[in-house]
Length: 368
Ligand code: PMV
Image (cartoon, rainbow, N blue to C red; front, side, top):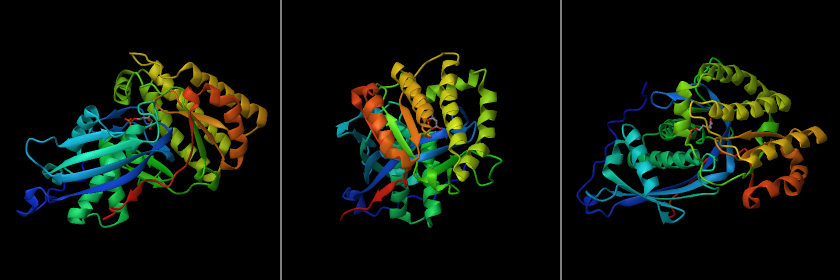
């Protein structure tokens, strides 16, 4: 199944390099994404049990600078600074991730890294920080490969490899390397859809190309059960098989709605997918609930607002308590009034993020 085994990508150091004065850095800002058809359940080496499709966000992102140095024996291979503070738990996570992608980037073995990372949103609150964080690291690794070997000839090669590597860190991260709408997981709908990497979907009606997503922070406390544990619980969930089939069936239906600009069908699927995800958590052997009372109040208000105004305003949730309010860009001014008058007071610390479908990761070339 593996696509990359680049044994040749080994750095041929000369003696001067080994004086440890060789170094460089790569910098990316990579966005989070929100799945409308959710990936929940996996097998083997990060292979999803069902296809998923997401919108790439814009304002919810991670900025990562990955400095690399010639590796000095006995020194830490990864030093990680999160919001300028050293974070050993994150460093350990990255060391593990690098182990998983070493076969794709064998030069990792020769380098050590100092990583500076910051999120534009609270960590661990169910905005996919692993998607933005790990895709940013994978993109940096691809740039380092380019720097040393110039092997990723086309943009297609570059982003596909970045997506593939991101997937090995966190499944949903593989969708974050592209802008717009991105599918991940093999499906009868299109032959090029793969379990191994994300595929951008370009047949999207203009109304969904600049869709708004206002993220209402119902709580910013760390979630009690990680996504890794959540995926695992699907193995014994009585509803698992029927759920995987449901997602497979929904993919063509959602893709058609996205293509046709059909908000009603889109909204119905988006809300049902979000509630199904949380229902799966609640119905797992070790049941758990990630929604907060404020999440339910927000859902209620959104549905009421929709009924009263007739506006296409829908909600989704990720694996956390926060509400993603989805609506067309042309009613933004009106919806902002609704946010300020009704929803803001339910947000923890009055916090929310006005986000929208984004263009994908942004590279910041070296300044020197
Ligand atoms: O990528 P992971 O392992 O963190 O899983 C995240 C899954 C959801 O965010 C809940 C859904 C999805 O498809 O992004």
